[in-house]
Length: 335
Image (cartoon, rainbow, N blue to C red; front, side, top):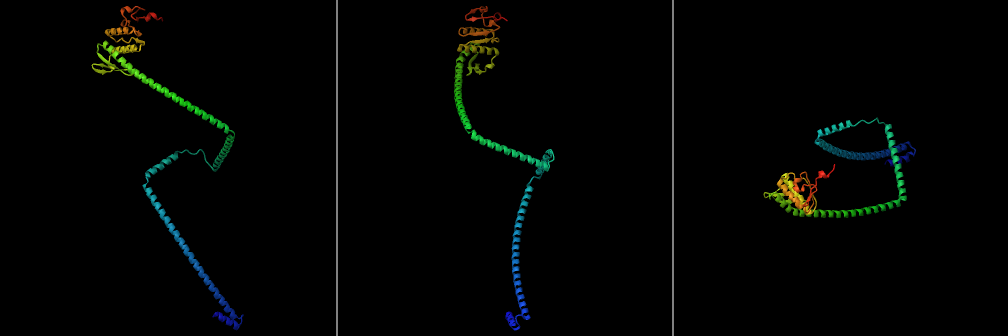
């Protein structure tokens, strides 16, 4: 209607009429106002959307912060519970001990300044550079050695392998030799033990018989071990140790043992005045035994009491009778 009215007035009053211009200006002002209103509405809508987005963001941040707060409160609660379980006295004692150790640490030899640290860093860097240079030289020499000394190294390896093979063969031969000697040793020990057992059995009866004759059958069987050691002797129906005998009786038993052994082995026996504790009756019996065995084996007697071993006719120096020869060493030895 306004446009129709304005068109009608433009025809009536002319195009340049003030009235027409005023109406035109009013129309333009209304259009501009409408555009401003629309722009304001669009701006308000944008602001509302921005406010809603900001509110959403703030809500998200608030929820995240509440979650972090809950997590932090949980950690604080756990730490408080852990602290409550801690032994505060032990912790305090540990802190005091560590503080005491720190107090005992000696003070540094001097004051360290930035310049001192800088000098130290330069020294370390110089050492690293020198080390790198040395390592480069080593690598270079290794490369040269690989090119030049490869054949030499191979020959040395072959020589070392050959020497190792020879050493192992020598070790094997030594083990075989050791096993052979060990077998021989065990065989000899076994044979020696068996021989000792046989010899002990062979000597047991003659010694017991002669010892019984000497003591008027006061003692019985004599038991000898594999090494011809005297285990026991029968006395009053029981076996008793030889150490229970008197000194003189042990000397007499030892003399009979040695004479019987020499008789069995056909060897020489030496007696060094070991019957000094014997009474005259037993001494006479032993003297007759020595004279009897002297016909088959050689018996040497050293004594300061020749009357115990010799008859009155044997006392003459250098005289030999019935296989007995006496020598007075006081006349034969010159000092």
